[in-house]
Image (cartoon, rainbow, N blue to C red):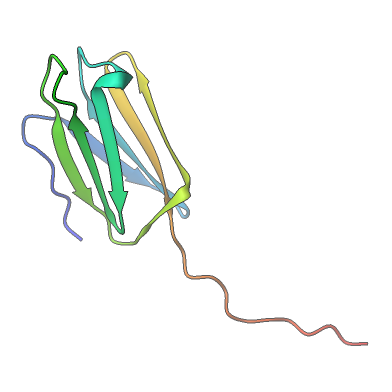
Length: 98
């Protein structure tokens, strides 16, 4: 799963066991300017038509994204996405011994 990023937008991706953290420099953009879409393992970040600055980036991650445990924040021109990993659920059921 190679990362595809728009070369005009500096981005960093870090991960731990349960999530990825994607940080993207988007100076001069407000949260109302941005649209973030998640489909499977791909997250797309785009500025809306009326935004003053154009932002367009897409990241393909190695696992599907768990939207329920994902969040986005915008602070001082940096968009941070915390994307949960949709981990395969443990299929082993423990039986209680009576």
